[in-house]
Image 1 (cartoon, one colour):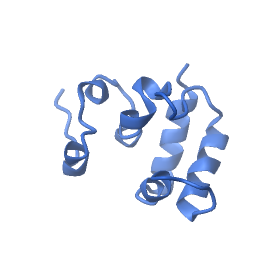
Image 2: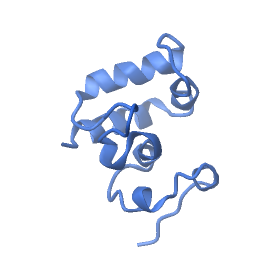
Image 3: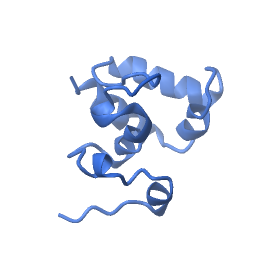
Length: 97
Protein backbone atom coordinates (compact mmCIF):
# COMPACT_ATOMS: atom_id res chain seq x y z
CA UNK A 1 0.00 0.00 0.00
CA UNK A 2 1.43 3.35 -1.02
CA UNK A 3 0.75 6.24 1.35
CA UNK A 4 0.35 9.64 -0.27
CA UNK A 5 1.03 12.58 2.02
CA UNK A 6 0.15 16.18 1.25
CA UNK A 7 3.14 18.32 0.30
CA UNK A 8 2.59 20.43 3.44
CA UNK A 9 3.04 17.33 5.61
CA UNK A 10 6.34 16.58 3.95
CA UNK A 11 7.56 20.18 4.20
CA UNK A 12 6.57 20.46 7.86
CA UNK A 13 8.37 17.24 8.73
CA UNK A 14 5.15 15.38 9.48
CA UNK A 15 6.20 12.54 7.19
CA UNK A 16 8.61 11.12 9.75
CA UNK A 17 9.04 7.37 10.22
CA UNK A 18 6.83 7.60 13.33
CA UNK A 19 4.02 9.15 11.31
CA UNK A 20 4.36 6.67 8.48
CA UNK A 21 4.31 3.80 10.99
CA UNK A 22 1.20 5.16 12.69
CA UNK A 23 -0.92 2.58 10.97
CA UNK A 24 -4.56 3.14 10.15
CA UNK A 25 -4.86 6.56 11.80
CA UNK A 26 -6.78 9.00 9.65
CA UNK A 27 -4.37 11.20 7.72
CA UNK A 28 -5.57 14.24 9.66
CA UNK A 29 -4.74 12.48 12.96
CA UNK A 30 -1.29 11.52 11.68
CA UNK A 31 -0.51 15.23 11.47
CA UNK A 32 -0.89 15.43 15.27
CA UNK A 33 1.80 12.85 15.98
CA UNK A 34 4.72 15.17 15.27
CA UNK A 35 3.96 17.15 18.43
CA UNK A 36 1.73 14.83 20.47
CA UNK A 37 3.96 11.77 20.10
CA UNK A 38 3.41 8.26 18.77
CA UNK A 39 -0.26 7.30 18.87
CA UNK A 40 -0.96 10.65 20.55
CA UNK A 41 0.55 9.41 23.83
CA UNK A 42 2.07 12.80 24.65
CA UNK A 43 5.59 14.11 24.24
CA UNK A 44 7.26 16.16 26.94
CA UNK A 45 5.18 19.23 27.72
CA UNK A 46 2.74 18.48 24.89
CA UNK A 47 -0.34 16.76 26.33
CA UNK A 48 -1.47 13.27 25.45
CA UNK A 49 -4.51 12.86 23.22
CA UNK A 50 -4.77 9.08 23.46
CA UNK A 51 -7.64 7.79 25.56
CA UNK A 52 -9.27 11.17 26.12
CA UNK A 53 -13.00 11.54 25.63
CA UNK A 54 -13.91 12.25 21.99
CA UNK A 55 -16.38 14.96 23.00
CA UNK A 56 -13.73 16.67 25.11
CA UNK A 57 -11.24 16.55 22.24
CA UNK A 58 -13.80 17.95 19.79
CA UNK A 59 -14.64 20.75 22.22
CA UNK A 60 -10.95 21.59 22.66
CA UNK A 61 -10.37 21.63 18.91
CA UNK A 62 -13.39 23.89 18.39
CA UNK A 63 -12.19 26.24 21.14
CA UNK A 64 -8.74 26.43 19.54
CA UNK A 65 -10.29 27.06 16.13
CA UNK A 66 -12.53 29.84 17.49
CA UNK A 67 -9.64 31.49 19.34
CA UNK A 68 -11.37 30.86 22.67
CA UNK A 69 -8.51 28.80 24.13
CA UNK A 70 -4.97 30.13 24.54
CA UNK A 71 -2.54 28.45 22.18
CA UNK A 72 0.89 28.74 20.70
CA UNK A 73 0.02 27.04 17.41
CA UNK A 74 -3.11 24.91 17.87
CA UNK A 75 -5.41 27.84 17.08
CA UNK A 76 -3.86 28.07 13.60
CA UNK A 77 -3.71 24.32 13.07
CA UNK A 78 -7.33 23.69 14.08
CA UNK A 79 -8.59 26.21 11.52
CA UNK A 80 -7.26 24.00 8.73
CA UNK A 81 -9.59 21.07 9.39
CA UNK A 82 -13.20 20.46 8.44
CA UNK A 83 -15.84 19.41 10.96
CA UNK A 84 -15.64 15.83 9.66
CA UNK A 85 -11.85 15.78 10.06
CA UNK A 86 -12.06 17.15 13.62
CA UNK A 87 -14.62 14.49 14.52
CA UNK A 88 -12.49 11.74 12.93
CA UNK A 89 -9.38 12.87 14.82
CA UNK A 90 -11.24 13.05 18.13
CA UNK A 91 -12.74 9.58 17.61
CA UNK A 92 -9.38 8.14 16.60
CA UNK A 93 -7.50 9.42 19.65
CA UNK A 94 -10.35 8.52 22.01
CA UNK A 95 -9.93 4.93 20.84
CA UNK A 96 -6.18 4.86 21.57
CA UNK A 97 -5.01 3.52 24.93
